[in-house]
Length: 244
Image 1 (cartoon, rainbow, N blue to C red):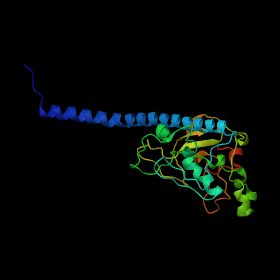
Image 2 (image 1 turned 180 degrees about the horizontal axis):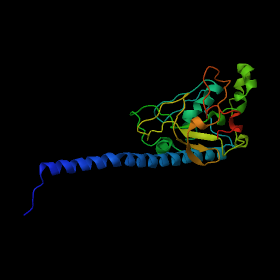
Image 3 (image 1 turned 135 degrees about the vertical axis):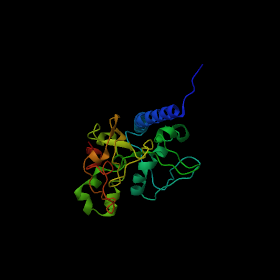
Image 4 (image 1 turned 30 degrees about the vertical axis):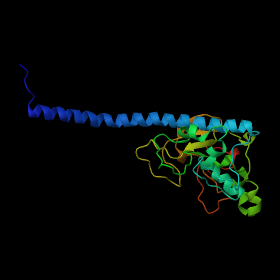
C-alpha cells in the first residue's frame, strides 16, 4: 500500500525544486547569451563578407551612400541626404541598401539584425551592425589640420575609401553590433558607446567580442565639430589608424 505524501513533504519538495531553479537559471541565461553572441559574431562576419564582395565588384571601393538617393528597405520608403558629407555618414546604418544587388534585403535581413531584436511591423530599418565612417570618409577629417579647413575643402574628403587605404586591417574595426539585442539588460552607454563586450568584425574579416571602451582614444571629426568623438567611429587617421 503506497503512503501518501504529507503536506510538509510536498512543501519541502517544492522548496528544493525552487532552489534548483534559482541556482540553474543564471547558468541557463548565461549559456543562452553566449549562444546568441556567437550568432551575432557570425552575422558580423557575413555582413563584412558582403562588403568585401561589393568591393570586389567596385574597384576595391567600400560601399557608400550617394546624395539625393533614398536608402531603406524595399517598399518602406527611405532616407537620404542632399550632400556628399551627409550621404557618407548615412552609410553607417544604411549600408545594407547600398549592397542590395549582392545581398537582397528580404533574404539577408536576419543577417543584418542582432539576434533577439524585434521591430514594429512596417517600421523603418537600420542595420544592427554599424559600418564605420573610416570606410566612407577619408582619414584627413580626423587630423588636427582639418579643424581649420573651410567646409568646401572638407567636403572633398567625403568620398570612396579603398582597400589599399586600410593600413592595419587586423586592428581596424569595420562593423560592430550596436543593438546587442540578446542581452537581457543592456548596460548604460558611455560617450555614446557600449560599455560591455560587443561582437565586432575587423577589416581583415576576423570577428571577436571586445569592449569598445578599450578601443583607442577617438579624435575630433572636422565634419562633425559639435559632436563628441566616439571610439571606433572616430579613429585617428580613419582607415589608416588602429582601434585595438
